[in-house]
Amino acid sequence: MTSRTGRGVTLVEVLIAAALTIIIAGGIYGLLSATRHTATMAKAKGELKNMAEVILRQMEKDISTSRAKVTTVGSGSTASPTVTTDFQPTGNGWTMVVPEGMSWMKVDYEVALPNLTRTASNTNRLLCKYVKKLNISKLSVEQWSIDLEVELVPEGMTKPLSHQQTLLVTIREAVTANLDPRWRNTEDVVNSY
Image 1 (cartoon, rainbow, N blue to C red):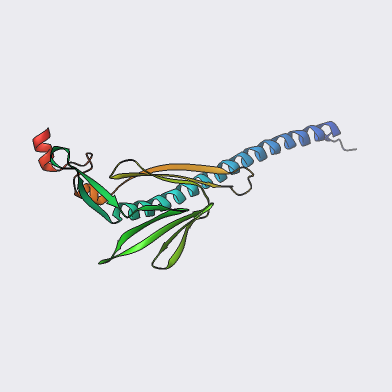
Image 2: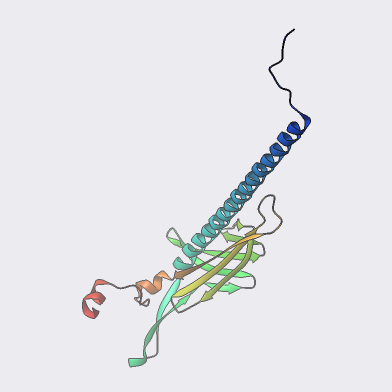
């Protein structure tokens, strides 16, 4: 007769092991799900910031170089220089004249929410299809403010995520004419400081 030294597994032990496995698997699933959600949100935020940067960079280039004319208003001690730009609002966008090589071309920005298009040289280009808000306002004779908000629904989500960014643009002609007090030349520094 042989004796058994091994011991069998009871049903209670199998059920406890199964319950522990389910609890651990649930915790791991929750952790992975939260990580995936965080990664999706971070990716969407990065995409929104990149979209805003592309739009603002293009608009800054066009607005800052738009054709402008420096004139003097008043006479004598009340005379002050001012800048008149070709940058003008239209019904649902803005139009301006910007340099192209040795000549000038007309550029139109059209906002038909959520789309923003730029038309130049008879070429329409969709800059973004996720624009929620775009405001351009004049702060002074030489400076404009662009306030942009873009919004999209990340993959697998139901709520939209948005990114808002503001950019200040200085008209180059105003800098050239020394109308912008933030820009100093060496003579100003020697005489004023």
